[in-house]
Image (cartoon, rainbow, N blue to C red):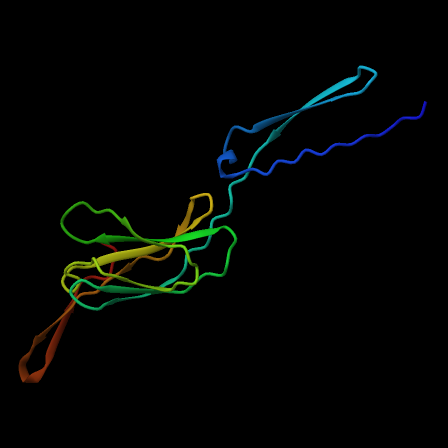
Length: 171
């Protein structure tokens, strides 16, 4: 009696919820022929997370008035894993220091945004950074953090002007 080959296909398209970091999914395949021969194989399947999406390069922040700060950045190339940009802000003050999410954009081509809630922008320094989020809701690495620079001018003798500004460092 000639041997007969048979085949089958197992197809599984994992979703974000199926990502495994330490415990694998177990897939057990049972093959049985008409002669009562049975083979059982169990495989461990690890589902890798989707890659992080690069952050755009933040290029400029510009104080436009008492409550407006405009941000500009380089756009990123189209990435099928891209879901959105997240913009974070921190107001430098004597209170607790923490960044909060202030804006999201779903369009990777957007490269500018004006923050209209930066109260006392001409007197208060704000910090910003941008991060890209992938389709599994995972944020990648952030852009550099930019800080608004507050410049004051004071008249000096002989018609001169003295400029003072806040420290550029992070804190």
